[in-house]
Image (cartoon, rainbow, N blue to C red; front, top):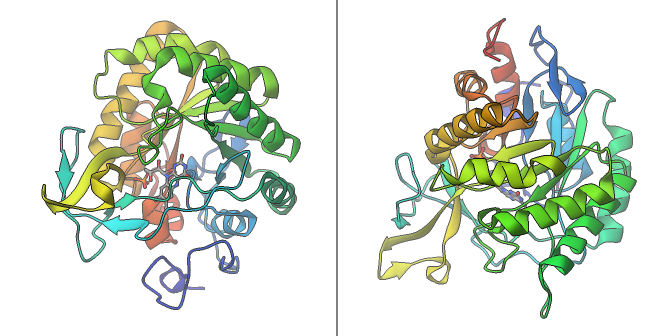
Length: 352
Ligand SMILES: Cc1cc2nc3c(=O)[nH]c(=O)nc-3n(C[C@H](O)[C@H](O)[C@H](O)COP(=O)(O)O)c2cc1C
């Protein structure tokens, strides 16, 4: 199949991005990267993965596995069912590179690489996703890594210990179902409870990562973080979580309000996570800051570079900044063949 004809988000109007309409996994030649890559104890054929979000279920994981991605992150799941926020869930925006100081970005009529993401981390019932993860692991080739993203769901009257136990329960279920790694989402700018921006609370991040690690034992634990406005916080964050963690993934998104003016704001004037091209530079700077802090602390944490990646050049910039592997979300949704193109264009000896 010609990669240009692959089903993609919003370009082919008959095609729906939801649980019930995953595309058929295509028969398509996948370019070799001429290298072997390591990720959390696994040997993989490329440094490319899909981050949490686009892969709604196992059939979505299989689709992207066929398109040259070697780490498949199953979308964030919860210990209970959770509905999606109302539409629009993906609002294109028009802006240059963001650094977290932008209070508002204007919406755009067409997708130009960047959008506001507003799903609120919906989840199927645990029985449903646990069975589906089992199925997914059986379908994927042995050299593909299945990572499962989990989040705790805050209940009224709960404190951090209960939230940590809820994260740990989801993580345990994911591992029992066959996950090769667990990713705990510590950042969701669309969620206004303490499970939304956990990474900004160092003490709570340590409590949750310890609870999860003690439940999943040797299975690698990845912590997904959002944008750190102050890089001075990074060494403290690392020293709090490093003992219980194998890798950190960044950047979830950069939060901003969306509207044509301060008087006409979308999403009830709440911030949403801006994802895609506009977060590339800030995410690269954050990866470099984490890589430096990891080196200085003598810990062995791996780094997943994420945010705004579209090309092999972007991947090389992340690897040079200190990422071990790279994940993508937005670009493969609009250009599903981009993994094939990135693999074909990676240099023989990429920076490591
Ligand atoms: C459609 C969509 C859904 C997402 N859902 C989640 C999610 O459930 N959990 C999560 O940790 N991140 C989620 N994200 C954030 C992505 O994993 C990623 O961190 C972000 O999009 C930045 O990468 P990008 O610039 O390549 O899009 C989502 C992103 C998109 C585009």
